[in-house]
Length: 105
Image 1 (cartoon, rainbow, N blue to C red):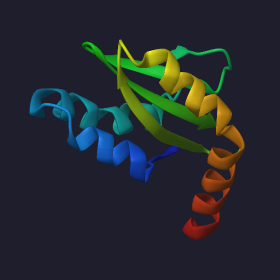
Image 2 (cartoon, rainbow, N blue to C red; image 1 turned 180 degrees about the vertical axis):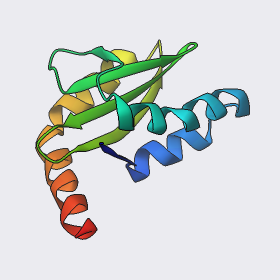
Image 3 (cartoon, rainbow, N blue to C red; image 1 turned 45 degrees about the vertical axis):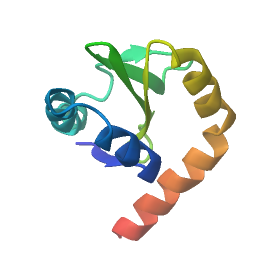
Image 4 (cartoon, rainbow, N blue to C red; image 1 turned 90 degrees about the horizontal axis):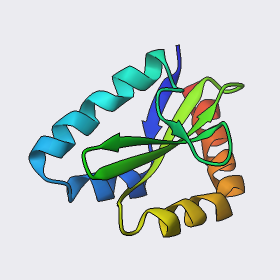
């Protein structure tokens, strides 16, 4: 089973969502624990998107670490800039994921 963790940025962005959308997003980690590949792949098999109405949640799947890292959210308008930002920071997200796994032990 995968461990699912949200980054600080992700959690701050999620707070801005309307309550009904947040409630759906709050159920997402449980779903990702069992099946981290439920969302749509975005250029890489480990970078994925899960749509919640007109909002999107972006996450990275690290099978070798058994970790899913929730990294960002966006609307349809700012979808591509958000994806580009995530792709530019992939090495930083990897380091954060490795640190999370080390802290767990």
